[in-house]
Length: 604
Image 1 (tube, helix red, strand yellow):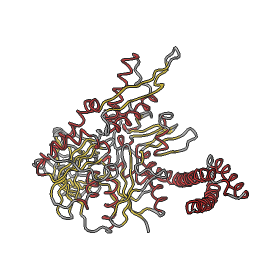
Image 2 (cartoon, rainbow, N blue to C red):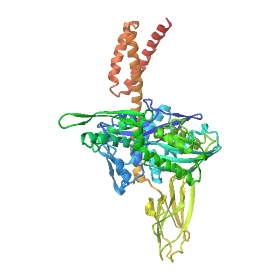
Image 3 (cartoon, one colour):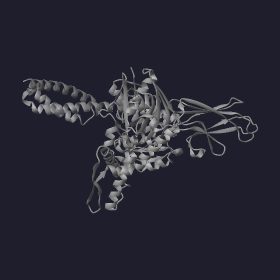
Image 4 (cartoon, helix red, strand yellow):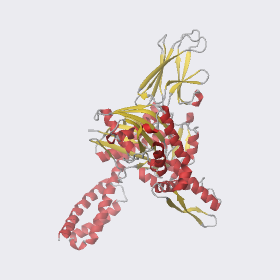
C-alpha cells in the first residue's frame, strides 16, 4: 500500500514526514540526518550529488553547487532581490527569454523548477528506500506569502520529481496542524515562521476540529540566510580594515565565509560569544598568508539584525490590526523555522504578547509533520480535522487609468470563486484584453502581473453596453484560474496562470521524462550509499573487537576475517553493489560470531 508523505521544501533545509497512526514521524536521510540541506551539486564527472554530501563540497565547487533555489522560484530576472541574491551565491544566475531565471550547472542552464525537481526526486528516493514502499499522495508546503506563480512553480517541481502532489499548503498552517494534539483550548493562535529564506505570520482561529486562517502576512525574501549575510559583511569589513583588501568579489571565499557565518550564528543562539577562526583566508603576493580570528558577541549579532527582527514584529502587529485583534486575545504563539531559535526573537515576542512563545516541537521539523497530517486528511484517513486556509494576496484585473480592481481580497478563505461585471471603454470595441494582477497596491502597475488574455468577438456597440463577466477561482492549493464571458454571445476565454519560469507544458513534460531517466540512477546511487554506510559500520565494529579478541578466534576464522577486512576496505572505494551486499552479509555473520565471544566474556 502506498504511503502518503509531507515535504517541507525549505530554502536552506528540507524535511520529510509520514504518519504512523496519529504520530507524525520524520524520514531521515541515509546518514541519519532528520533535516536535509537543500543543496544540489554537479561534480566534474557530471555526477549529481545532494544534501549533506553536496553541502560539504560547496567551498571547493561553489560554481556548481546550487543552494537557496527557493528564492528564485516563480520570479523574473529583473527582480531587484534576484540581483542582490546573485552576489551571495557561487553559481551563475542568468537571464533567459521573457526575463525568466536560469541557473548554470556545469555546461547546462536549468530553471529553478528543474533544480527543485531534481532535489525533490532525491527526497522521493530517500522516502521510498526508508519506508520500503512506493509513495502515494504528497503534500508540499510553501510560505504563506508565496504568490500564485511561486505556488505553480512548486507544483511543477513536484511533477518533475515524479511525485503525486495532491496539495500545496502554507507552512505556518501546516505547523499548527502538527500542534493539534497539544492544543486543548479554542481561540486565536499566532504562528511565527522565520526559516532560512522566508518569513510568515499567520493567525489561525481554532474552533474544535476546524482550523481557519483569518490573517496572513509575510516576506518571501527575509530569512536566516539574511542574518548570515550580516555576519559575513562584518567579517569582510574587519578583513578590509586590517588588510585594505576587499574579498567580496571572490565567490569561493564568499561561500566559505557564509558557511562559517551560519555556524557562528547557531552558536550564538546558545552562547553569548563565539570565536570565528578562518585560517588561510587570503594569500598575499609576497608569499605570506592572512588568518582571520576574531570574537563575535551575541549583542553584536543582535545589533546587525535588529532591523530584520523589527520588521517581523511590525508584520505581526499589522496582521492583528487587519482583523482588529489585540495581543491579549491571542491564546498562544508558536515558533517555527530554524531562525526563530534566536534568543532576541523569543524575548521580543514574549514582550509583545506578555507570554512565552511555544517551541514544544522542533521548529525545523514541525512543518513537514503538519504536511504529513494534511496528506492523510486529504485521503480521508484522518477525518476529525478541517483546514480552512486563506489567500495571502489580493487578486484582480487592470481597469481604466492604471487602476487595480480587486475581485478577491487577501485573507479570503480558499477555495473561493468570485465574479464581477465589466464593460467596454470605446465604441465598437470587439476585443477586451484582460490583465490579471496580484498584490495590494491601488495602481495596476504597482502589482505583480500574472498574465494577459483576450476576449475576442464582442459584437460592435456603443461603449458601456456589452456585459463582460470576469470570474476568478482559487483552488485549495492557492492556484488561480480566470475566465471572461461576453453575456450577449456567450463567448468565453479563460487562462490558468502559468509559472513564471516560462516553461511550456511540452517543456515540462520533457523535463519530467528526463528526470525519470535520472530517477533510476539516483535510486541506485542512494541504495549503494546506504549499503556502504551499513558495511562501513560493520567493518569498523569487526576491526575494533577482532583486535581485542584475536586470540579467541580460530586461525581459519582469523585468516577469513583478515581477508574480509582488506577486501572490504577496497570495496568501499568503489560502487559494485553486488559485491558490497555480499561483503555486508559476511560481515554480519562474523559479527554474530564476535558477539558470542563478547557474551561469553561478560558471563565469566
